Structure formats: structure tokens, C-alpha cells
Image (tube, rainbow, N blue to C red):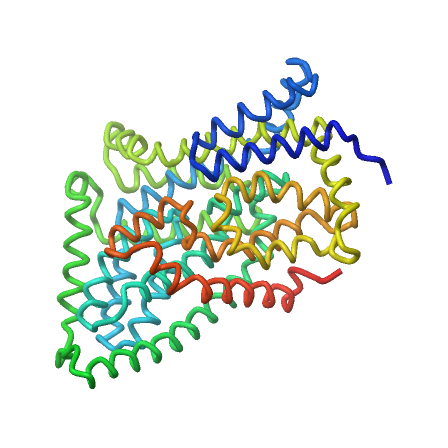
Length: 457
């Protein structure tokens, strides 16, 4: 085995440590941390500007397809959300609960699955929390149960190619996002079944808690909860939020079903590998705009409305290209990995991704999503890869173990939005949800082992 360079090992660890620290402590934006730190580190190690430029070119070539996919996927689903694609489904699920606690928990889980199809946590919570919180309050159900169920459901769906974690993992590993995602589809289906089972169990537990409070005279239950009124309030609120564009939209009934067909068509074409994902979403945007909005001015207005989210993710991944390019092409990452092998317990090396995946949810409390995928994943990949473990399996192990914990992490901006919308606080959310979410992530890892997505070496 090749001997690691002490200088490169120390330099690589220093760059990783400083970058993770800056991201964890929110001292600077991810763009600053992942551009400035590796460039300064490379200069201090004696690399010239010409070499650093080559590192950058290599990193950008690795992530460019993912950047384009993200930009157009966010625009595509933003346009379909403007058009109210998911509203009838959410309304129908609210009505289906009939004000029964167990049905409400199951409905919440399913609403979370539907709402997160666009991959945006903020949109998910804006759509679901105001719609469901009145129902929870009417039934004296815990708002933390609402957050728990939405967090797990969104985590399951977040494995989609246009979701942030998978996109980051794909860019780090240099794997096509659809190739990385395709084996996860059966796991997502298992995850949806598991969350429904968990929702039933939690609903039964919540029913018992409510019954105890009623028996103790602490609360009085309403004879009947008016779910139609709650559903009507949801529909009215969605109309009000889109009031500035609803009169300018193509609102014919056939347009809604055309949007459904377009969404299914774009996703189907992408998964069937008929078109690259970035081209599929670009084509989807080009068709969705004239389908829903009349005139170029309004179409460009909707692009501008969703551009900040699209460009933010694109900028982060392009900045990560500098970080990854410097660490990979300078051989710092390989040197760090070889040094790590010398101190790992025998037998852990080829399964390091499984061990790290099992700790994925606790690590969400210690690292940001960017730090986990852009700093920890490359190191695990370089280390476990020395034993012949494939980059695809390493990415799957790290992703599956971590992704369920996305919305229990204080580093998730969407979580703070959810806490604000529900009037909850982070400490109580962690006490209520953390161990259930961690346990669910372990179940998903075991399911992945059973499905053959992961294996013990």
C-alpha cells in the first residue's frame, strides 16, 4: 500500500477541520468556507495558482450536470406549486382523516410525502403546518407529533435526485444523480409503509394520552371536529398566497391534469434514462411556463420568483467544486484516507460507511448538511474505497443513515421555519422526536441491507 504524505495528510485534515468548523458555527456562508479555505490551504502547502486552477476545473467538471439539474428542477416544481398541483391532494387527505386521531397521524404522514415531492423543506412546511395545526389543536394532539411525522415523511422523500442531500452526494462521488437514486426507489416504498405503521402506533399512543387528560378533567373533547371547515381554510389560504398571479394563470380544468401528466412525464423520462435529468427538467420548465402562464413577462416573473432558491443551491455546489477539486486532485484526500486506515480497528474499514450511516442522525446535530456531504463523505469514500467498497454503496450508506434526520438538525433552515409556524421550540422537538427519528433511520439501513442496496463486507 502506498505510504501517505505527512504534509498532505496534515494539510488535508486542516482544510477539512477549518471548513467543517466554519460551517458548523455559521461564521461564514458555505460559499466562503468551501472556496477560501481550500485555496488558502493549497497555497500554504506550496501549490501554485496554475495547479489550483486545474483543481478547480476538475471539480467543476464533476458537478456541473448536478448544478444544472438543481436549477431547473427547483424552477420546475416551483412553477407547478404556483399552479396548485398538490393542493387537491392535501385537501383530500385532510377530509379523509374525519377528525380521528389515528387517521390524522396517518394522513399527516401521507401529506408529508406528497408535499415534499418538490424537494424543498421550506415549501413542505409552509404547505402542511398551517393546514394541519388547527386539526391537531381541535383534537388536543401534540404539535410535536405533527413535526415528527412531517420530518420523517419528508426525509424519506428527500432521497429524490433533486433533493439537496442526494444532489450533494452525487456531486461528491461523481455519480449521475439518477443512477444514485434508482436503487433507492424500493427503499422509499418500504419507508412509506414503515412511516404509515409508525404513524398508527404513534396515533394509538396519542389517543391514550388524550384519553388520560380527558379522564383527569384537564381537557374537554369536542363532539365532532369540522374537517370540512379546516380543509376550506387550507384552500382559501392557498388562494390568498397566490392572489397576485391566480387571475393571470391559465385556470382551465384541463390545465391541472396537463400539469399532472407533465410532472409524471418528466420524472418518468428521467428515471427511464431517456434523457439526462438536467435536460428533462429544462424541457419541463420550457413546457410548464406557457402551459400555466400567459405572456413572456409573467413567465419571466415566475422564474425570478424561484431563482433565489435555485441559484443558492447551484452556488453552494459550485463552491464545493473548489473544495473537492483541491482535496482530490492534490492527493490530500487520498493521503488522509491512507493515514486513517492505519488507526482503524480491523474489519471496520470496508464497512466504515455503514458505521457512519448508523451515526448519521446524531451527526446532524454536530455538522451541517454541507459539512456532512462535502467533508465527511469524501473522507469515508477514500478510506472505505481502499478496501474495494464501491463509491455507489458508500454514498447510499451515508445518505440513508443521515437523510431521515435532516429536519431534526438545528442546521436546517426549514426546521426553524417549521418551529415558527407551529409555535414549537427546538429543545422540546429534540426530546420528543430525536430517538424515534434515529431509530427510524436504523430501520431504513436494515431495510437497505435486506434489499441488497447495502452489504456487510
